Image (cartoon, rainbow over all chains, first blue to last red; front, side, top):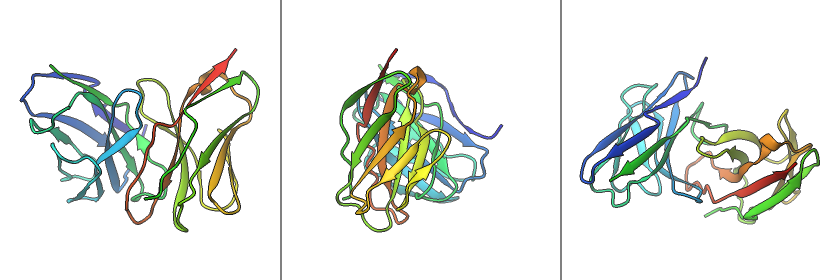
Length: 113
Length: 110
């Protein structure tokens, strides 16, 4: 079945450590996105990528980094510079950038202790 | 920036129609109107989208005002599985800013 996967579902890290969240899609989509969601809030865009080897900052990119070396993969690194990293992180993909349906993964809940 | 405004919460009785409103008075001519819904602890799920004309699919209908400054998501017969947060967003083909606001939390009463 085609879809988008994120791993792990739950992640715990100590303060000051970098952590990388995985996102993989087998939908052959060009565009991929990372969002952050805090309790009771909407989604905020962290980074997005229109195509392989290209990515752009979203609204809250500070303290995060991404790479897009393969079409299927768009990992997100939460660095120690991110002041409040505890959140629910959602990855999405779409056939092309904006304008049509985004498919979301199940999310990774990151807790920094 | 184009943004949307939705009520924080709504209630519906099971098996009755639900009309979820969304205001987007600063919409531009190329903005698509998208609706997603999110169940607790899950990623959002696409519901429907449109540009100018009303749209129907197996999940819902989207009614877009003639001036495109508002739209309404219509669930024809609410079920308990429709209880979720519903997001109305404007998606631009040329990126400016995507606003994914707090949405409308829909409760369905048995």
